Image 1 (cartoon, rainbow, N blue to C red):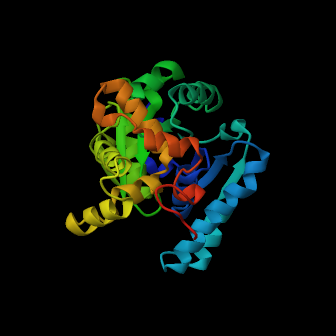
Image 2 (cartoon, rainbow, N blue to C red):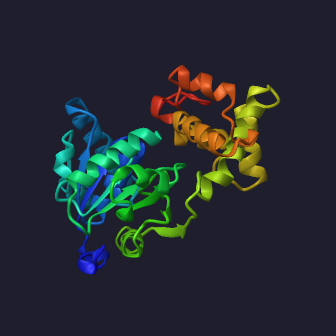
Image 3 (cartoon, one colour):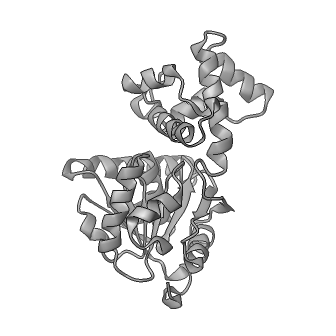
Length: 294
């Protein structure tokens, strides 16, 4: 990659693929920072629900005093939603936030490599567990692919894990870090390119251990969460956190980590898999380890 891209301040046209909890949060974050955002949704019927999800999140920011009404309206005006992947052709920075499936992500990047043709355009993955080198191997120009793992809720939590593969161009790393820190206001940690990176490699044995404790009947979710919140100063307990992340995401990430390392600590417990099979995915479906009414 040449230096034609300048620095992060040149990036003002962003694309986001996926408009679930994470994708909508990334789109909102970028729009609030003044960037022009195109969001790719799964189909025509997903446009309005996606826009409502972003609008509702912006509305909550206004209600909590984190954003003005004018700022909310300006951010919404900067976001376009479409099912047409070709709409990303002129984007300078495109981040995917689809399901945690290595084949699906690699196939998406292979398509994006042909659509987002500018030599200095950056392709990023919000994967929480898949090594970037494996995605790059199947995606075309691996030198412009990088991992940017945001945390939910994206507009609120300050951290992003930045992961480069052995093929990622140094200028891509530099420009992406500047975009994340100077434009989007995030705190970045550099992570090695291994499954789970830093945070999830530490977090998931803890989450899965808490689920096994509930599964065994040793303690309820409420008891486990209260113990970790009040006894260990955690802002949220492991079962509430799993519900917030999404139990389907927890299960898929745990499965990927277990397949990579073969350690029992990463194996998804049967209780977790049963909840996912039953459609109880946590907050986003209003039921998981807890039931949610608001």
